[in-house]
Image (tube, rainbow, N blue to C red; front, side):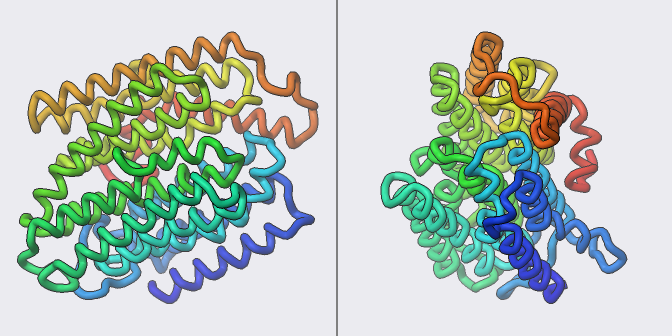
Length: 424
């Protein structure tokens, strides 16, 4: 399994480099590059040589082994499909050209992170993700706020995760671990996925074109969220308790703050703020340790990864309206069932966290309605598109994404087993 994973990472990187050559810059080539970089683990997982029975949330002792779980493989396939659909629907000049570079930087790290079974390799790989973003953003945006934010998040993530490793009683976190381990890990994970008060990845990436925004939105956040679930499941009680409390508090604060910003902001800010608020809800749902919180998080990841392709400025008004209703969670469509599952998980904790989740859900619904109304009044950028095959493919992709984002929530009992292999 280890040799196949490493060979697959290397093969995906080589393939993405080949598609990144200047003469191959079409959206189709970019979509194939993303699919090759993130979709090959599915072949590894479900072939006759696969190991589909591995537990998705267990940490073994020692340095760990490379063994991709069914949930991790499903997440990688989802990110590959979401990234490919974004590039097919975007049709801008810079995004397709950047897609192979994004795949080379992030996809192999994401694959290895979701394959790690020990705290040390997981810590190192989660640290590498924001650092890879910092390197890329420094190239496309120049030195400044974007790169500084990515470097800061990478530094906080690395220091927190490695401090947790150093303070643990053993490298593999054996029978006992001090509470300070959970505190260090909570701060590190908050920085990795952009919880308040650290860098909001989605909001920072909203100022970047094309695939460079997908570095954070399509790869780093899902891997960081699933990494949080793995740590919560594998830590002993002395370290897991403070980790749960801090992640719940920071996740709820993130959800409420960015839901309020989404309800009041303009379209570019609104889309990024909805993303940031949903990340807070995912982390809050996971921190409860309940199955409905995990199911809600996995389902919300599906909607969150798909819906941005329906919100592009060139999309028809009907597609943007559908995308905003899915992102806002208009009952019973889009993100609403996923957020309802998270609400059910948090409601077992206390009244105040429950009230904060409902407040965030209300703000996100208001943001979705405002975005839908604006989409009705605003014509697509660039007017009517030409009837070339590339533009027709982009149009079909937008409609497909809008329908998938709207239906993913109500079809959750079918979507979650299909994507992640987790049964209700």
